[in-house]
Amino acid sequence: MSLIRQGAMALGAGAIAATLLAFAGPSFRGEADAAVDPAKNVQTLKPVSSFDKIKDKNKRAIALFEEAGKVIQSPRCMNCHPATERPTQTDKMRPHMPLVVRGDGGVGAASGLACNTCHHDANFDAAGVPGNPKWALAPIEMAWQGKSLGQICVQIKDKERNGGKDMAALVKHMAEDELVGWGWNPGGNRTPAPGTQKQFGDLIKAWAAAGAACPKIPASSGKG
Ligand code: HEC
Ligand code: HEC
Image 1 (cartoon, helix red, strand yellow):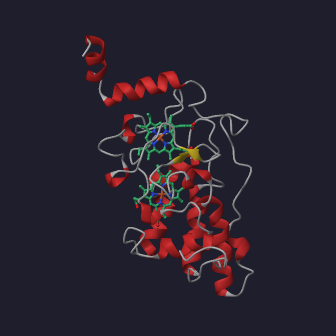
Image 2 (cartoon, protein in one colour):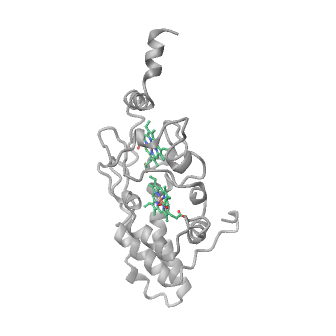
Image 3 (cartoon, helix red, strand yellow):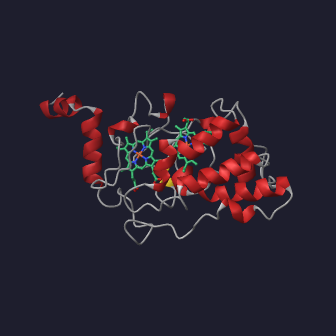
């Protein structure tokens, strides 16, 4: 084995990742999916009060959840709740480059690249890498991609599939979790989730208070 090769092998995964980042060029960094920098979201959230006129409780709950669904189904959330082992990225939800997989605890496979090799505690805009102290891929039972909003709704209420959260814990997670909050401060030219986390939390709280009914699941999609 040549000395050069040994030297290359001695480099840790971190150095390899740094090299990948350095050589991958602009196409690796956030492509200009949104034209402005920093990106704004033109989509807003309606306040809870605008749903007061819906007298039927279930209909009101569904309308509130559909409004909150603008956030849930935004690329900022969906990219981390994929249906496969691999995250997606950018506003276009492309497969994550380079290839990384969930592994144990969502932080990367033992034999592959760990998320925190590149994703640190905060967004690092110089390299176009988003960051948060809790950065990890959502477990497979929390997969949202490819599901209807009704299916996602049923799933997030299901303690078997939502990490054992009761309604209060689920509401708190949506309203206060800092990784969820990253969706409104995504860095780079990523489009933030619509509205604010506070408005989103209020919609989810009002949905829960109205009985937490879920939108109808289209007949074409399989059971959630
Ligand atoms: C080699 C470095 C590297 C590793 C390792 C890595 N990522 Fe990334 N990741 C990036 C970069 C760079 C971006 C930004 C790409 C862009 O916006 O074009 C990114 C973007 C993402 C996004 C998209 C954010 C958005 O909404 O656009 C998600 C989700 C993500 N990574 C999750 C993960 C997870 C989970 C892991 C571990 C299993 C991981 N990444 C490991 C470099 C890495
Ligand atoms: C960097 C990856 C990442 C991003 C971005 C992300 N999540 Fe998650 N999400 C996770 C992980 C990991 C878990 C599991 C750990 C936990 O419950 O705290 C999770 C769990 C959840 C849960 C628990 C219940 C369930 O069935 O999914 C909800 C609700 C949730 N996320 C909402 C959101 C929303 C809303 C957004 C966007 C505003 C979002 N997430 C963005 C990684 C992410």
